[in-house]
Length: 316
Image (cartoon, rainbow, N blue to C red):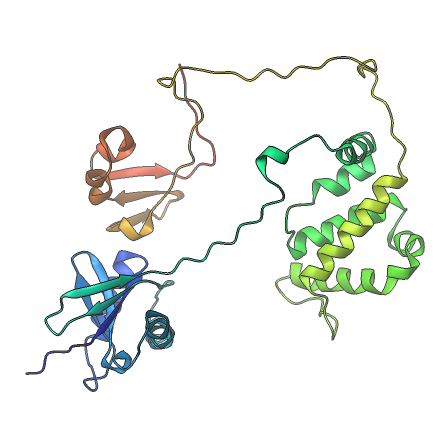
């Protein structure tokens, strides 16, 4: 009898049923002492392999584990089904499985336009916004614009821009220096928005970053060319406008949080064949782990019916 051992372990994160199936498949036939194997650390699923023993840092372990786990997950996917598996905490272990070190890296990308103390009204916004909300064609174009628009949003925005100038050729004629890039971006966007590949992308397709920069430049130019149309109920110049903030006691619940479904904590899901919008979810652990005031529907019988809805409501 041989006991599989290793100096390193890497936490696996995903749906608990799929992780259990992953453990079952991987552990069913290890080929050698250096084969990948899965164990549980309490409720955590942890991948291990002697192949990683020579690693000297958690970063190196993660690189090796990423390859080994990805290959095994893909094989399970090909045989039946296996959702995404993420790698979490890296454990450094002694021979008796005592954990001597735990490491986890988290990468966060933050975009900060300014410090909060530097926030002040910007007249450029006032000028752009006035022109946008008082011109229907510009309003329609901006309505499709998001922070980092997808190719579908890019295509819709270009269509709205074309409406400003009476069509595709009108937009190109108005910006002759950008005509080639406009055509490339639109053709690239058109190929992405059709899943059946009805429209082929150009040989040298546009990049998203280039499309964003182009649309921003065109939009700024289009807006600045519009005249400001004063609304009928415009305030008189010099009017003092106040927007009052509201304060309530801490005991008053203000705002409803969106519902969150944690698939990694769910033990079973049964979908109704006659009603695709409802499902019975068994999630006893989630109810036990939450404070009383957060248990909500989990305090109902463990098998509950959930109707997927995008809106929350509080009455009274």
